[in-house]
Length: 350
Length: 274
Image (spheres, rainbow over the protein chains, first blue to last red):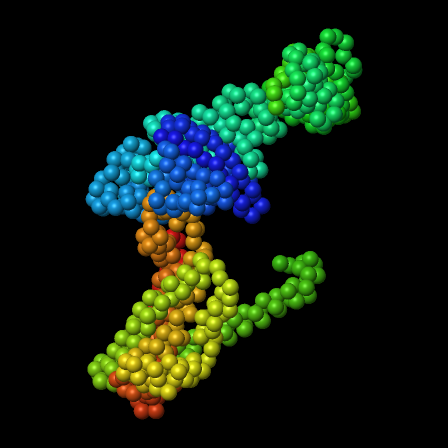
């Protein structure tokens, strides 16, 4: 079971054009800032938003193809959706919510209810079958929504911000349980989220969506260690630069240059970890190959470290100890010297 | 309060309290205007003759006719009004605002004008009534069917407005959820949309029925005032004022209780969240 999707949708100011494949049993997280078009991706896959361009194929079968004017409506697609705020039908019990899809697909009421109760037992809600959604906790509602989506035996499972409606305490336990159910699901699964923690704990692979385009995709390790967009870099807490490499020197697109230990040619990204950035009050002596000067823009405590944002020709975030921050007399403002060793500047092809 | 501070602030305090006092006085007058007539109704009702009056034929006839015609009008309004509300709430087409305005016009139109309009359209010489009579032999004016039509004409907008508001307020993503679960449009409408707008539908039906039950102007203009066939309770009340005040009061009381029941239903509906 596989999903092949290329989704082109124009909706108001959103111009969405993304392509990705998901293998059976694989969980892909579409991660991006709010307004990037994540929910529209999900709605298009479910058949709730028509494609202006592109196609959706499930197991090689074309479910929708804009060019060929093929379009299965949502009710004919074997797609299970867990909506952001679950959208459990408020007038139906948990049991009848789960049985809804089975009944709609022609199963008789007693059989549908029996199957629904089996599913509720599987998500450890056997005792709450008769409860109305208003009587369920957030975590319970999430599990009912999951059971409702899975009960129809979908070929594709979609989850929209599955944990965002939960409070912090419920999130941990629900995430763990959700992971178990996602592992048990053997079809392709797509979840969209703006929460990187949700993405890395639930997904096998990330697709980064920004302003309607995929800026990066790959394994969690690839994406977090080698970001390809400022948004991802900020998310994982790395300094990201882009420029043109010529041997050990990279001329940055924004001006200035950085020296790298590894040689490279052509367009590259560079990452520098904040803890590899040293700050000084006066021009440093020593072996660091990259030294420049810039104004301190902000400093904020982050755990037992202080993150100092320095502006100037090459903006950078440095991670220093509170003692180091005190030595720098940051409150006094003014310029500081920045030094980064060439070995700490990691280039990779853009 | 006492002392210098209290005395010093008195003029301003009096100025500030004059307005609320006036408002309260006017509010009391409003309550008197609304409630005193009802009190009068209770005081003058011939309670001792109640049993005897209820057994009278003309009372029976008016009660039965009102009940039958208002319920028939309610059924007609529900069958036609829910789809109309759905079209107004969900479909986009040119001239929709104009259509809505036209459909809601009977709410503000003097009922007697509605009756005249019905007469010219559905009367025996009307541009709809004449061909209908020639084709089917059915005459609408001065028949019970005409009463139902007149009542539906004035009551339908109340149902449409309320149900349309309910459809607009409803979270349509529930319908999306139903679709992803494999439910057809019809199943979604029946099992999701209708239950979710249930409170609005109940309120709309209650308002619609109350309006139909109390309809006077359009009915008497279009359907006339024939005992047992077109003489509904409001018409009977008006007629009995001249003949037997007791009957008029009794029928008025019945209508009053029906109205209270409707009010309770509407309030209950608006407080029940889906």
